[in-house]
Length: 335
Image (cartoon, rainbow, N blue to C red; front, side):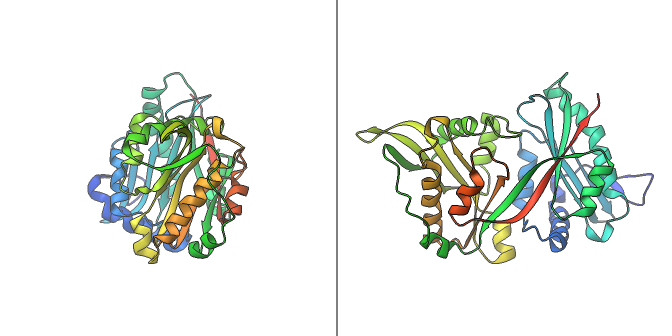
């Protein structure tokens, strides 16, 4: 390790062999923040295989001896319009807060991000994106002091009793002229097409690439048997254009920590050709009923609080309630 000259800590990129210590740090943060985040070691290892994450140059860990006490990593986007929002995630062990580690990690990111950005989007403006929970005054103050601006709010929404909610779901038959099919590898490209069409008018959205999509649907948490695609009915058993998707994940770390199975709805999207027909709500209701019948006890999703498609209201009608709100923070990096 290379010692940081300003502190007693050691600073170096996060390595694959650090996941045990990294998970312990995240558990210490979760014990205080109570954000219901419980990644497993397998979840953390997947960061190293993400085609848009460079852990060797785009991550940093802070160590007090053998104890990881701070971390930070960044993920590039697939497009830059009008600038490149370079996402970053980090945290500091609650026992080590107030010692400048968080500020130093964010300062490191401002130096580490430009070379990675220039390899993908030379000549395009760069912005760093981060976030914090509403009510986290220390984080909000830190971001403000470092020149970040609040740009968007996101809700984490939860169905706390999936069995009851599924039993009380409103009638949501499959819309006329539509068929629901389970996700399968041969349908993955159709789901990707829907995803990129559905989200192109959403704040901060960028089209998913085939490489990034393969990493997502090949992930340890992805649940193909609880993911569905809606198609136009082509007649005689054939299907036409893909219209909507509901794609799900289940995180083993969450189940181990809480004792409950939670169906995380990773993506809900409707292509323009399928909008205003109730397809997404019917498809999500179908997914939730299946999950409840197979033993899932809760369901969680994240949503843009100002979604242009009225997604928050849709989810509330299906039994979801806001559990926590986060504020996206952005800093334009002068070049």
